[in-house]
Figure 1: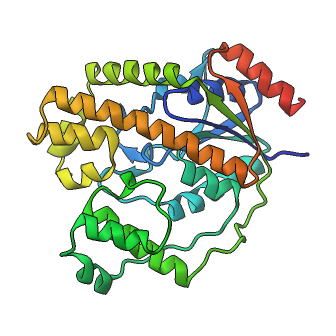
Figure 2 (figure 1 turned 120 degrees about the vertical axis):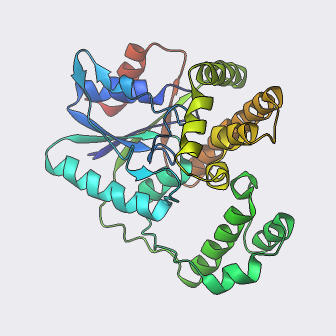
Length: 304
């Protein structure tokens, strides 16, 4: 099969970027990020951009869909699919290979499955109707519309109302498989055993906190972004913001954030396994291998 995309995916803290860069450096390739939070400027440490990793052997590997909108904006999967297609066509028209790299399952699946999404406009009347309902009431309402695998993505009233808004619109306007480009992707996933993965997450969290993550969140708040808007982005930005506004003590913030990231990693794997059951083939690579060995495994499967 003639592939026109290579995907490097997996849960958080598995070393996706370093592998994608190493592979891209050998294949005249460019990287397209598939991370729903790395699109935001100034949100660097908490999203793990690690932009220095895009330099290898004195060369810089081009990357795309990172730092494209301001913090506070609500970027969505419709916009991602639209922006991905523009970059994908640009790279391929230049005779280069696109490498998709990230862990945001919804964004990845939107590209690999090829469903053309429609932009969901705000519904002022619906928002007015729902604004006084509790979070529990909103989640129950959403659950009556579709099966919820978890509720962590609707952990505020604002996000729950938007989810209901999207679901109602989507039921009336179902997506059709008319993406605009035929994607033939060879997909690689990186995995560690569960205990090793938890250890890597905890170590990385400590490093991020020690290397300025709290200062980063404070700086974004000082720029005028509301605490509610930062909490909307979840994980590091949710819990560090709650610490900075006095809602959590430091130790409590660390403990809850560590648990949340572990749970997030588990949900990512659940999402990827579901993608496999739905027909997306993923070649899994042991994360304990060296980068050179991982690249070799990718080349072996690709056959080039």
